[in-house]
Length: 201
Image (cartoon, rainbow, N blue to C red; front, side, top):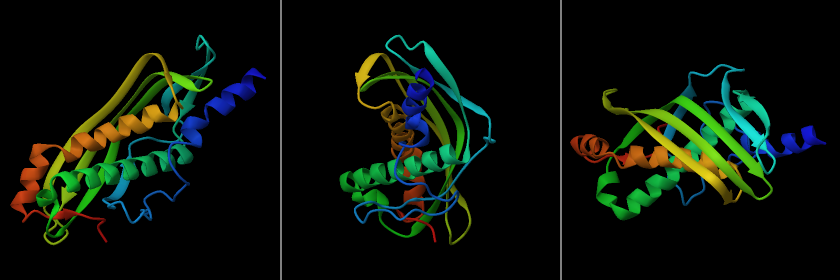
């Protein structure tokens, strides 16, 4: 019974990060209300690499190590793509001038992923951390316009209402927000005639 409960709770990392499973490296079909930005998502993880700990129970005593897998990779990729698209749409509405012009290519490399989360009923606590290196290039010239790493992290010492999947989603969204709000990125885009971030084709 305890094992079954743990397996169900751990679904946050294998089943509910975001949306349906997609092939690694493939482009996603985004809703028309979103801007598709990221061309590729890669990482330095290998199957079996430790990425976190999932805990269950009111005192979070039941633990299970979680490892990198193709399914985790796909969920994280989709979560990252959706987070960047959401933040870009928000940035575009607030500052349309920064996103006008030609297309650019954006590639993401996940350098680090770590979580220690406890899910109990309809609440969670713990921490999640992700670091992503972003490379923005000009398809026309092949030149690198911008490259930097951003981090997203969340932490709750007390139980927070909601699903534990929210923790990783919030961490990824923070990394995306930090990327798009970087003044160095805006300067780089301005130097190229203020290109708009679209999916590179």
